[in-house]
Image (cartoon, rainbow, N blue to C red):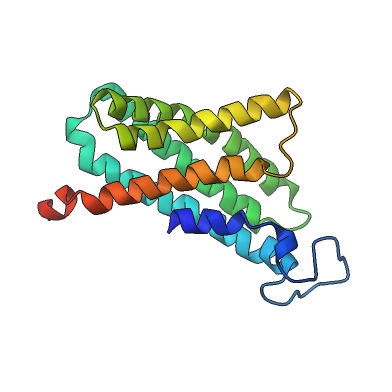
Length: 194
């Protein structure tokens, strides 16, 4: 579900019906119009996607915690802490009013603190799985943050990704969510414990 939510947010606003963002005269946009998608649907889907990813990663940690090294477990907790921070930051940002600068700044500060935890945590957690010959899950946890760092670095260096920029971040993250979900679906260890 997290991957589906993320992929829906990647649909360009130009593909949704009018009115479009920038049409300042629209105060109550019709459902499924581009403005409604931008103001209502995308924020809700992003929060849902992050929360569902947090649940999936928590379940993977719960399932595999006994077989992890302390360092890999520390990276996993860092990734979960960062993901929780991203959920909180997104929630604060999307519920901020038009003149609520304090809430928006707080959201940006939370993101600034959470994103390094997510990136370093997922890479460390994924490398632990790669070393334990769990290649699919290890690659799924490692590749998206590495691509995100490469994307941000190249963007800061002046490379323009404007037509497909968001897709370079959303598709690998959606793939990670799918692999985590598939891994949990196919492994019955958690359900057997209950």
